[in-house]
Image (cartoon, rainbow, N blue to C red; front, side, top):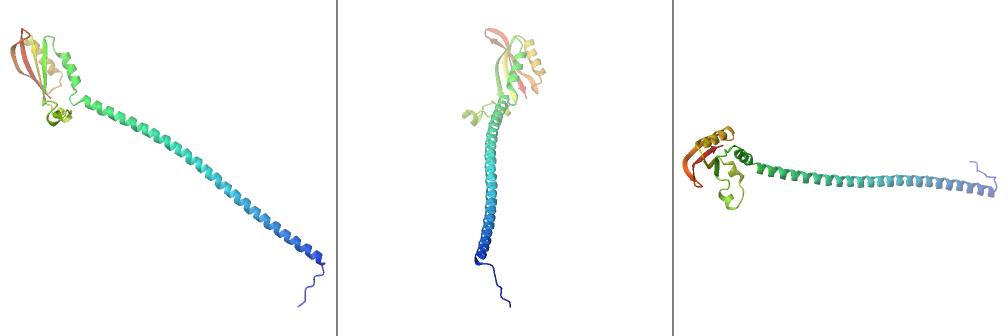
Length: 197
């Protein structure tokens, strides 16, 4: 084996060795700088994504809050409408009393006076009446209305009877009783009509 002999001066050899070490350290520093810059870039991207995510989350939370507020407003409006509808249904009632009374007021001849209107059964019965509660079921059970009054002549009573039958609001309207009576000092015909739904 032939021994290797380096004939270069020791100062030159040291200089070359130092230059190689410097190059190696420069390369190491460059690689570290590149890695550090890459890491910083990645971290900056992540931070930017996190900021964007927070902004989106805040925007979504604001939108959700606004939608919840709008939904609550719509629910409140819907409840108010339902309450009004329920009230309207209760006021309308099964036989449309207000319309019926209005029609009755229009068809009663001028020579006829109505003195009493009764339903059978009465609207407020049993426990509901004792507790002051409006029982709609008892109203649904009203099958007969009795109308009492006085007419000046038989023809006035007959006219009322014909007019009530003509309205078709009842299944039948017939004269239950008629008698001569004294009404406020004058002779008249007292009567009771029975109207069936």
